[in-house]
Image (tube, rainbow, N blue to C red):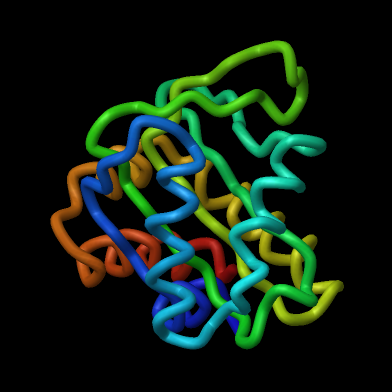
Length: 158
């Protein structure tokens, strides 16, 4: 399954409100859980993994976070995307002592172990495009977010 299909299969929330990463995780988790995409243990799995392996990525203009957890917490592979109304602090993936202000979250819920790496590679190609990130932040709904990703997807063949 490609990147766009995984996002279509997941949830997209624009202007999600949350004061901390745990609230952002909870908002996305609740929607994924309601749809049966993840198990009840998914949220705790995210929190525990984030403590050990931070997921904030320092980029040129718009930092992003790519939280995920182990496959045993997932029923059906998908990606949840959230644009945040206000920036939320995440620790940097490369330096956990460094805090980053995040406004875009791509939460991976992969049911197969090998698929995390492949999706991370595809997301990295996507998030290197600052114009796309800007457009995703401006998007008002799921369709607009998917449209922005589709444009990049088609040009990169990811």
